[in-house]
Image (spheres, one colour):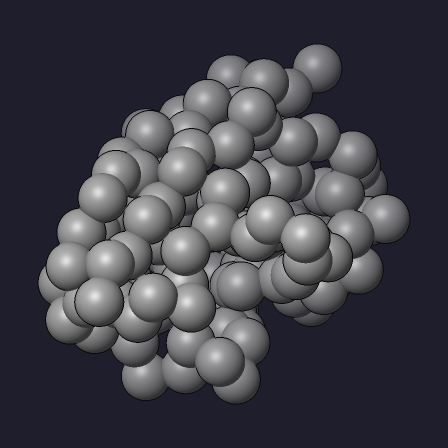
Length: 125
């Protein structure tokens, strides 16, 4: 069983930075992991995903601004967010894939069987 707990969200002005963390319990080093977000009235969307070998991808909307990384020794996933924009405002969720090993990052939310409770990010203009 995998449990995920996000932290690091908050309120920031446009242009600012935040680093989200996702502390995992259970076996995650061979799973794909990802960050998804959902804004009020909008569908959940993938932000960044990473596979068991560290290969990763980020959404076009955040490319060049957000970076996903993980520390297997600490069983923690990170999302470094720079140059934040008001449109980045959303609840951010950490996720881990149901299957492992996972050698290619996946954007399909149905591949992720474990989800955290979310952390709110609010960016003001």
